[in-house]
Length: 248
Image 1 (cartoon, rainbow, N blue to C red):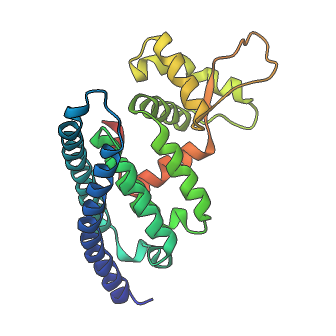
Image 2: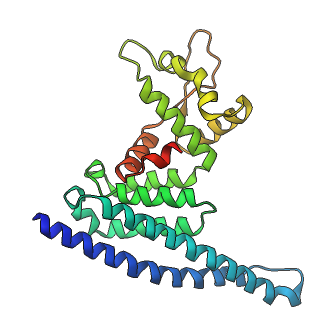
Image 3: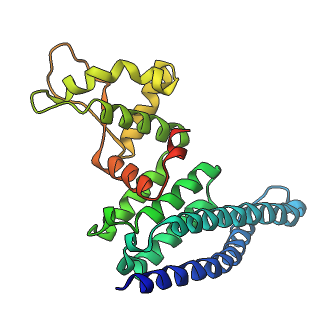
């Protein structure tokens, strides 16, 4: 594909993104209203008023989150060189599905930070890093990203940075490698050990971390390393031009 053709394709995508954002907002408002109407309430006569309030507030939040995702994704794609975009994936049904999943998750998000990560993830999925990935893998990575709380994501990301700073070598086992920097993790995260232990355990259950197991001298457990899935998530976010935001 010629460079000018890629620029044109990128422009068409941005136009479609704007149109679909408006259409999606309307459909989400209807869905939120239907959910609200199905909620039973013990105060009979107040049900209609409560339904209206839930539907109104929920639809406004869903609309705002959807708009935030659209703006964030548009901004990132605009900054990307057209030559770096995987046009085959951009035109695929799988990419349409990925955008829809990101919109749905954004509408249900309680924080803007998650919406920003979804935007970066979708933009990053268009880059060469993801070229050749099966769609099921991209979908699985989005599920892991969406399942992590703000605190869990922050802990996993700080641990990933430590792993990048202290990569180890072929002569050290995984525990020896992790032991080099493990004591720095509380300081990097700013969390007391009890809170940190809980977040590590829950992030592990969600597929972002793995606990070191096995028989090692003077080791009773409780140390973790990031999974390849979480490492790929970070690479996709960085490919989606999410750099400074990760370090905030």
